Image (cartoon, rainbow, N blue to C red; front, side, top):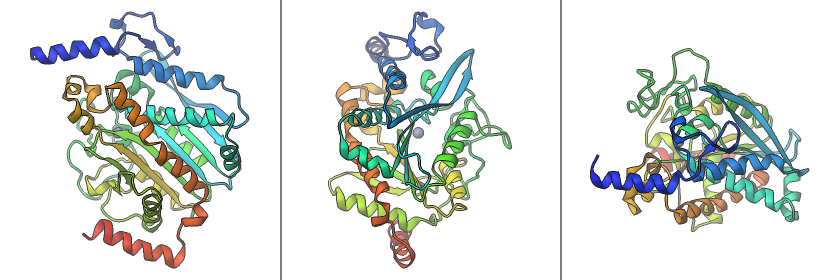
Length: 376
Ligand SMILES: [Zn+2]
């Protein structure tokens, strides 16, 4: 390693690892650094403390539950879900998901920060409380806690959860990014053929099937980082370059967002425009949802982390820096930068009857969307 890189590594280590955290006990940890597979950071500690703190909040509008425990190297890592709003099956549903890829910590940070904002507002914001009577907002802020604690994209079994669904790409994906079964030592490992899905993936699928599929309309925002210089909103398919059946509805949502907030800067597009992949959980769930007859739109927020690297090339000295803003002011910018989008989604899901096209209008928008995304 070059002297400059060593210097930058020392800077990163000194600034980030002053406090360690034992995830299993959710307390500051007395173990020496050598006993941890990876030095957790101040940011980790803060996030995990905040998640833990949500359990102590008592509000008639907030329900906190544990979906599962994941065991890894003798420690237990819980996966939590939080729910706000109506428990009725006939209200629309919106879910925010973070931490599918443990290394992309900023995704979990964005979800937790927004959740905390809503929880604060529950104590005083009558408009939010009355709006939640006709809506359910769900959170799984950290789906892959082992990956988060280890600082890896994959889970504790080295499986990439977003390549783990039993679905093969129809267009050959790039190797190995699109998912591979050659070796668990290579990133983007799918897991063994015909093996059951990983526990975390199963937990997510069962949660979506139980909580979202019965809803008359549901939408997910799954928060990631790492691709390109721009913030992108991706929708299925990842496995195919064919449009989804709800292309018109998705196009209507894009138009609604851009007409309502013309100064936002998201690139809204199907993931397969960039690359196809095997095993995408949202492809898998979206296809299942078609049998319900209820529109289900899973979106992925892909925060463009390359621009953080461009502004601060020192981030390359640390793998975290490839996927997360290191400078505190850039992290704050990321945390506040997506609030408008998340608030918009709450309003759009609650008022889906006002904009979701049906029948002839949906077919017309489907044609427009095909021209826009697939026939240029
Ligand atoms: Zn990701």
